[in-house]
Image (cartoon, rainbow, N blue to C red; front, side, top):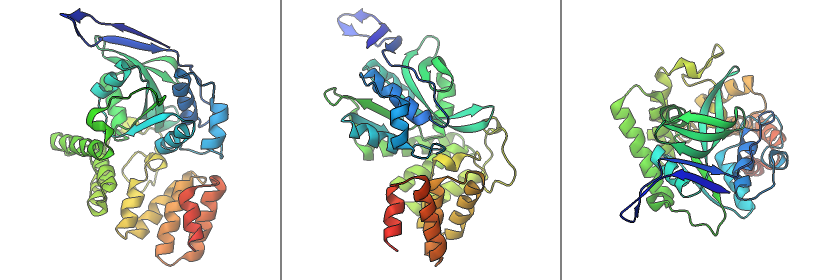
Length: 333
């Protein structure tokens, strides 16, 4: 691997490079719904791995049509290979540049718009250019030489609470400062969401991120209120072209393919019919979405529908064998 940078020394003190490009990662074009495995393979290749999406995908998504491989699943897989992993939320552009300067490519989870509509998408950042204001990225859909303008990346990254994933050999020291603490990083994400709401109270994604962070802090009632506010607000329709009719929420229609905070918050606050309504809508459009089967099962069980809950859990496990939460729930019957 190589690091190409532009910088100077001033009186013996380093000045941060204004332009940098990490080389050595192998680009892969994704196969169908293989964004996560392909992007993880690219990140691992930077550190010498020969694994490709063909080896990774069957482990991360036994169902080839699986709509979502979560950052947590990718992190778990990389740890299983012996890599160090940092999975964080509430990132910012300065942090991304800091990590890249340290020689660490960064996976970011972003929104993405294609001719098929809006959806979640991972990109591997491998460099930046401050003078022109963009990141260099390897993109499994668009190609190996993608430039992501700073403001545009941040707009699309915000949809996922600015989630980022760094994979690295354990012998390499990853300098994260206070972000090394998950609790401190969650506090930063909460503060960022509240700041954005103060600046623009009509920002639906800031409210959604507030809900996600409050839920992780163990505050489901406050999280549910934030999700309620988020779904009432209009969002940039350019993020959701080809939106079908009848979607029972105000988010981009594929939002619940990737983020399950509303399910969890509504479930934990006893709003079981709402969980069933949202999950049933997802399943009507994506009938192999295992997370929606799981949350609908939990809500049905809470309402006394044991047969319906059991059927949903069995469906979740059919589409994702070994799904830990579904297995535990089924064993609890």
